[in-house]
Amino acid sequence: MKWEKKGLVITPTGSDWMRTHAMVPVGEPRHGDICRVYFSGRDTKNRSIISYAEIDLNSSSSEPRFSGPVLGLGELGCFDDNGVSPSWVVDHDGRKYLYYIGWNQGSTVRMHLYGGLAVSDDDGETFQRYSRAPLLERSNDEPYLNTAPCVMNDGGTWRMWYTSGVDWVHRDLPRYNIKYAESKDGLTWKRSNTVCIDFAANGENALARPCVRKEDGVYKMWFSHKGENYRMGYAESTDGINWNRDDSQIDLDVSPDSWDSEMVEYAYVFDHRGVKHLLYNGNNYGYDGIGLAVAE
Image (cartoon, rainbow, N blue to C red; front, side, top):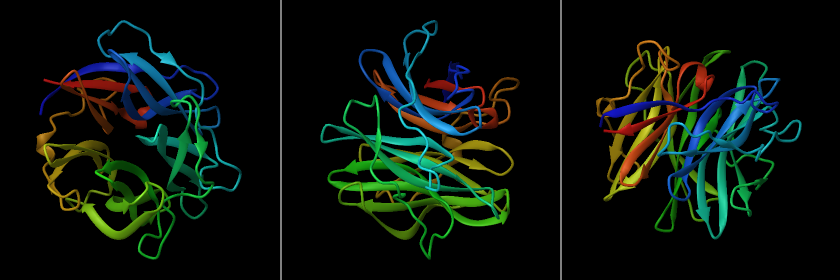
């Protein structure tokens, strides 16, 4: 699938909670051509905070409408006291489930990342934590980071694809791949250390931010992979567990000289008026903002 880049559609406002960055977009088509995009900006202390912007997919000249923060930092000492980033949104029983990434500073390693859940009863204007503890805590099989959940309520079975740490090469370099979990309610998850996407080469050290869609019985995953810099990856599955990876199927690479000239990552794919749209970040993990690409 080839993509036509439309450029940046959301850029940091410079506000206290969005001094820099607009990273890890989660798109939600609303009404007409309006799409709400949850993301995290970074505050004056470089901590991620979740807000949203609404953009017009049919107008490149219209300005985004920004919200204030919809989910802030966790309590001091909790898994998300140094930042929160959105990962996925699911509508369920009149509520919105916001699965998110909780950031926590490390000492022997640079950071700890765990998946959390917040819930909204006002259509996404505000969210409250389901728990002060993460949904994806450490285990003997998964003693490192466990985060960036992508969640689907698939005919009553809740499925999750998430990023899980393999090891730390040194203080600033974690290695992580993509695993699978299931749940009966979207709240309590059974993990069996099942790897969905593993490293394709020795130089690859990061497989991040899975985005899974089910189309005509086929599960399709867009994800990010990194050696030195992030690129886009793609895989398909008939059961959501065993995947065939073929990165050549996503034709979206870096630009010659632009905000995405070094990296493309954190894809979020959705359909609008029968056409696939893709939100993503570029250089420096979304420092300049969020870009949009449309399937040709």
